[in-house]
Length: 118
Image 1 (cartoon, rainbow, N blue to C red):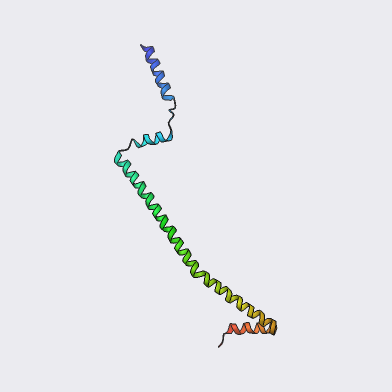
Image 2: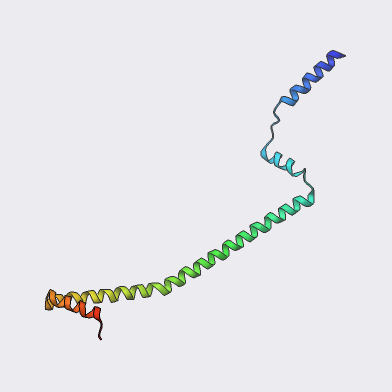
């Protein structure tokens, strides 16, 4: 009888030492089974609410960014174009004065513009 017990122990040791082939999904399901149903449902509900909140916040942020950026473009671009045109006009007038009256007239006109009309 002792021989049978020794053989049984060796067989059990060999079975314990063998790696059981489990997939990650099977391990995950097995891990989930050790928690009560109410806890699993709570975790799933919490995860779903978190996901829903994140997608809603992302959607709101996307819409807000679109509204702010397009509004800024509509308000800033015309001003920038008009400013550029005004600067170009002033530059062309200064260049014409320099060509017509010479370099000294352009310098005196620039000084007069800096001092102002008073």
